[in-house]
Image: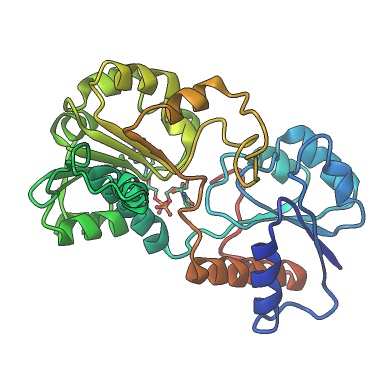
Length: 335
Ligand code: NAD
């Protein structure tokens, strides 16, 4: 039995190998770590694999899933929560077992949303560089006191609630929007409609999945409804935001600041060292030119605790698949 990991980084190998002994994963399972992202050019590397393990930017459309099935792959294990990059109907038709890691330390992503918000608000990234160069001027570092401000949480699921709890604890007024709001959100804030959330929030933080219905949820219209000078934070999925519209809102000074851990065209950029290359993506380069934009490269999940949980759940999913057991993390087109 061979499990091939696509898009694997040295830390994936480290955590999966370390957690293997604690799992019920059969000793017969052979791990193969491939650094290549899964796409049309690399799908042939799955030859010999019974199962593959993939991450957020691997391509899993109908064509690639068909090729995987033809190569003998029987299971696709997502080492992430989001599954917007996978054609579930095609996977069902091909008889592929698909499972994900639905929750791994939601607090890890929530704390990263806080880190982005606070860094951008108090300019700690700029202060760090200034002080190292012996510049102790404060001009340009002015922030706002978050206590008493309004924070809008879009998506009151696991990560949205963990983020709401943090801002609630900081003395912020918390608003939440969700078509199916969590019952216990009311202890942290008030559920409102999206227009009210946009109009009243000093910080808007996105925590909903990417579906066709949420693609460009934050577009020109939504940006125009936001409070002037507000901050937008996205640790969810890049395509929730229309980046070109956001750039226009930043240029017009309507949007006060932007912090993103995800970017709609991140696949050709993120998770690699490109410091010796030209970045061909002009939209991304324009974003980086704003002093009030902070970008991290999809690291919200990246804590030791979350990596352990990702490895444990993925190996448990594999064990369920091999034993033919019911797997609570299994996905199907009906989801
Ligand atoms: P979850 O399923 O617990 O919650 C998602 C919530 O979004 C649900 O309550 C759902 O009803 C709501 N929702 C659906 N459509 C909506 C809409 N149009 N407007 C507002 N809310 C809507 O998911 P979660 O664990 O909280 O994760 C949220 C997202 O965070 C994931 O889908 C994933 O894209 C992203 N994520 C990012 C990282 C990272 O490293 N940056 C890591 C993990 C997850």
